[in-house]
Length: 480
Ligand code: NAP
Ligand code: MG
Image (cartoon, rainbow, N blue to C red; front, side):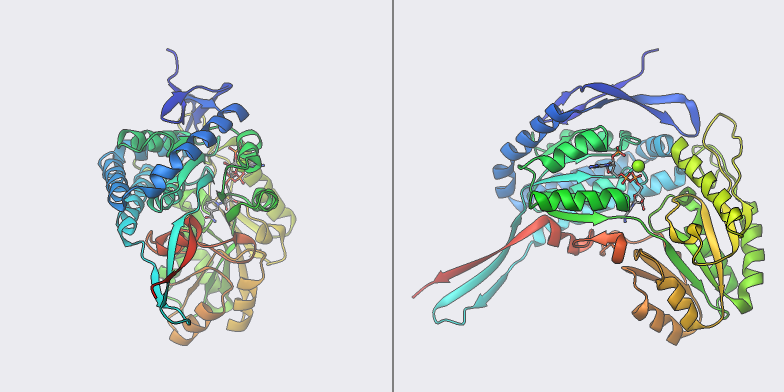
């Protein structure tokens, strides 16, 4: 049987590429999901030209047209959530429940921005000079390039495409080479929903070829990137060279502080979820569990028992709670970090590679007990189902440990003490702070992003997305 071929969308036409990427299922390596065309520089050139050509009409389109398109896309995703969720789980490896959950989130984001298209308000002020009015309005930025990672293969493209189109920009999307399937499906839905030719363009392929060509292209006005810190840094430099507007969402080493007075079930449940669910492959995962000495042993015992009960297996098996790691390179990196934790003197619980029913990248969750915050496993983002447990004595020390990191995406505290929760919310150096909740798992209608090494530029999602996807104009009008 020949494998199904999926092409790039450029100017409303489906076009092949230089070669094809075999998209394999990490739960079952024998299964090829499809062959996805890899774009080269020539396809990027065509895609940017198509986006540029489509821009004036889309920028001036009635907000009703944009709202209707985004609403139709959201409704279609929702109606197809089981199928799209299964595709997501097959290509990325998160469980079917997580795949469907992420798909529903993508749909909700399109619906949210359908409404926002009608609420793109400005300001009208009196000038400081007589008989003059001043208008402040928001206009599209232009052609935006979107570069996305593999770990949220439908939600992240959705949370960039929806605001981009909402505010009248045209798009060139480059999804991660590891997970092109969800982006292909999403772009197909947009095209079928009536998105005009050239308003959304898909160029699949590697970052070094397609991503570089996008950054070098003078006709791309802005780049929104989600991925790792090293790639993000190089993107910021290239974007500055071309004076492109840029927004980066990057890694995390998110702390969860557990105080002596915490509800033990809430603390263990929150840490189990945010450290290990989605196989730990969330930028908001809790990878440093910072636990006060009085509750430490009870916490570790209970978390260890809950971890050992987790079912690791095929993402599509309804019994599975932890799907496979997404790729062989990620699995090898995770296993290396487990060895590093042991060599650094942590007590390692779990973390071993295991067999599934079929050949896949299966690993049991790992806890690094008696870790310090100085160990490599507590400082570097592992991006797998691995978490350090770091013991501390008083609140100030716990807070200092939480903030002692180059990252600042998400953080959490488990406590029943209002003052400690309040102080932590105020003093945590993170963009998102959780009280008695996992550090991962956020709403779609509020800003998402971090501080320090985790983010650069304005926030994504919710109404704050307008900061990136619009540019402000100040108009003066003399009516004397
Ligand atoms: P990555 O390796 O940085 O890749 C992200 C994207 O950038 C991919 O599409 C990649 O292409 C592309 N890319 C690579 N090199 C490039 C270059 N020189 N120029 C332009 N584009 C380039 O990240 P990943 O491994 O896919 O994802 C994991 C990372 O994403 C983790 O660090 C995680 O924390 C972060 N993440 C952050 C958030 C957030 O919102 N803060 C959310 C999710 C994930 P190819 O890989 O296809 O070659
Ligand atoms: Mg990568």
